[in-house]
Amino acid sequence: MHAGLIMSVILHVGLLAWALWAVHTTEKLDMPDTPPIDVAIITPSELTRLRQGDPDSKEMTAKAEEKPAEEISKKEAPKPKPVTAPEAPAAPPPPEPEAAKAEPPKPEPPPPEPPKPEPPKSDPIADKIAALPAPPEEKPGPTPEELKKLEEQKQAEEAARKAEEQKQAEEEKRKAEEKKKAEEKKKAEEKKKAEEKRKAEERRRKLAEEKRKAEEKKKLQFDPDRIAALLDKTPDKKGAPSQTNAPDPNATHKGPTAGTLDGRDTVLSAREQDLLTGMVRAQLKRCWQLPGGGGGSEIPVVTLRWRLNPDGSLNGTPQVQGGGTGPMGQIAVETAVRAVHQCAPFTLPPDKYDAWKELIWDFDPTRML
Image 1: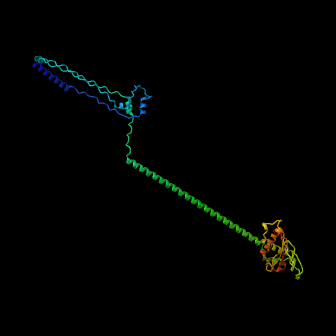
Image 2 (image 1 turned 45 degrees about the horizontal axis):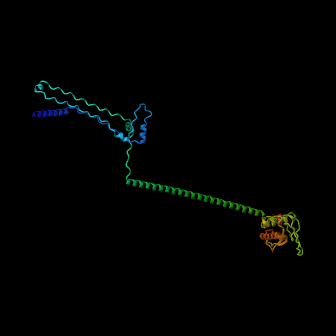
Image 3 (image 1 turned 60 degrees about the horizontal axis):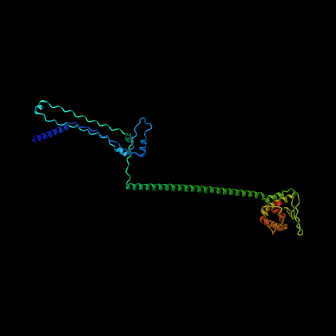
């Protein structure tokens, strides 16, 4: 019994020693490093395009199984199978001391080389996913303080913009008012110039009218001295004796009508009578204003008789000798009497007073105008 126990202990100790020696002498297996796999997040549309394939590709590739991107990213390279060490042969029985000394121990065979792990197969989908650009990093959103500052900045910009717009509107309004004032001032100046021009034209026309009237008056005005000189130089009076016949108070003498004169004390020649008639007609024409502004067949002829003083003033009231019947006749008489009063005093030659101290005149529009 003791012999069997001793043998068992010896065998176990030998087996343990051989195992320790085998562990120390065995070469260390080099495990290949697992290559890192890039993970990219793609959208479903991009994944669909990747699954459709490239129409320009010339090589046929096996269609990859549809797997979610997360499973592809989590896929690991296949691990090599662990190599099991060959079982050690059973320990031979202890040789006899004589045999051990006679034969040397045989060298142990080298352990077999472990099989090399196969390289992982390339995944085309993973390669295309890895080739995609990395998505931009999402920046964190603004904080409440930043949001408040942004809101205040936005409000300040809006207020500045409104202030600028209001300023521009006020500037445009001011320019429009200035333009309106300038136009009104220009119109006022033009109106003033036009008014001044009109007044100047009116003054010029008035002066021209006054000048024309003055010239006309000058033409119609007769110089009594010149008329008297002409009367003295009349050929009909040369060599004629002076007649100083006394007037007959009982005689009734009526001179010729239509502007002719009658002198009872002095005998005038035809030329002298024409000159005196022209002088009286010129003066009455300036004072006589026909009713209605013109003459015609409806204006009757009115005959007046009036006496004059030596200075040409009226001596009494003019007397109506003819006409004056009807409404128009009465108006014609009034205008004729008014003309005699306005023309007095008459300007006539004083030395021929006896010829014009009493006048009988026919106010006939057809002959006086």
